[in-house]
Image 1 (cartoon, rainbow, N blue to C red):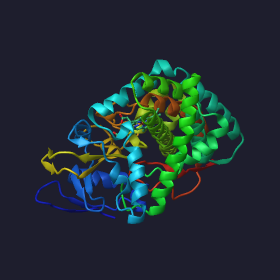
Image 2 (cartoon, rainbow, N blue to C red; image 1 turned 180 degrees about the vertical axis):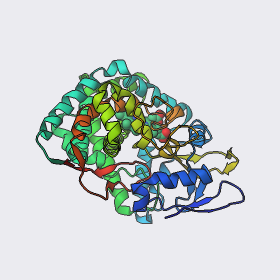
Image 3 (cartoon, rainbow, N blue to C red; image 1 turned 60 degrees about the vertical axis):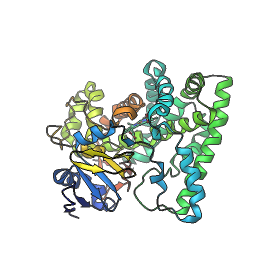
Image 4 (tube, rainbow, N blue to C red; image 1 turned 180 degrees about the horizontal axis):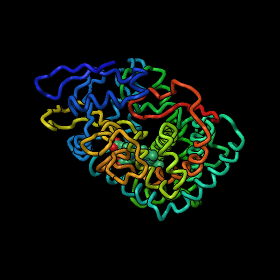
Length: 413
Ligand code: HEM
């Protein structure tokens, strides 16, 4: 569907894009480009929020303190009255995550979290990822068809992250069910009572599970992320409740983002056989290519902010309480910032993409996400040269928050 634009007192403009139409999800880039061209900051009545698509604008806004990260109410907006109590309990819990905090209280949680994931502490991330990927790759030998998401990306990321965090292998299935079981983090529409209750139940399960595990690690530290986080948070005077909440932030922040990125990267390479061949012939280019794959079709599609005080950006005035969707993937295709913005160029070396965010909330796990994606691609690149996508249409997640494939069926050429 063509987006409709109407001028709104010369103030950005309104836009009528159906962000959930299968045609948008399948290929959002053409519509996002039209939107950006018309106005890099536009009002969407459908989202009841500003939509920002220009690189310069997104970058500026993510660094601006007037746009707050305290936005959890958006995730349960429109919930029926009967589930209001669950919705408040749910958002009350999310409010403890560093992702949703501002200023000093954000910095107080972020500093120990950053120390916990710093590279010297995580020397074993790469070896853990390599060990996991080898187990999975051996299961794919001789297969003529497989689902890259279910048979590879999902298992690889879940097992590797669980090992890094320190989740015992027998608990992985239950842990997977909770961590994928509907964390309402989209913020785009009406939310059902059932969805809120499911999210609240998942939070309660994962919380009591992690509480027990953190207590065990405090008593007997291991060489894992949970022990490190527990030690760093205790040393910084962070309460037990906030430590658990932020362990969950890290789990939720790491799992789906990395899984979907691996799927998007594999699809991009299948659709660009020339670029796939370059990486196949020169695997040493892979570490740098990961950032280009994030720029080209990253998995964190948009981040939301809430306007905290009157603010003006590129002549558009925002009022307190209004929500803003900063479209990272649109910014990453802005031709004013990137040459040949719509082309995948695996030899491109430009770290200016916004796929890991920007400013005070820049992803603390970017290093881990990059390593996991690189290790996955070391195995996938040679494999992909022998496979093709089995069928269309592709099964995209209907979300503005994450961009990813629910399945990617491949068959041998
Ligand atoms: C390739 C995969 C990943 C992508 C694309 C990604 C993307 C992002 C983005 C865009 C943000 C900023 C959100 C905002 O500004 O509101 C963010 C924040 C965050 N990410 Fe990641 N992430 C990835 C992997 C990870 C991993 C592996 C971890 C954990 C080890 C992690 C933990 C976090 C945390 C805790 C935050 C909040 C930081 C803060 O609010 O200060 N992420 N991530």
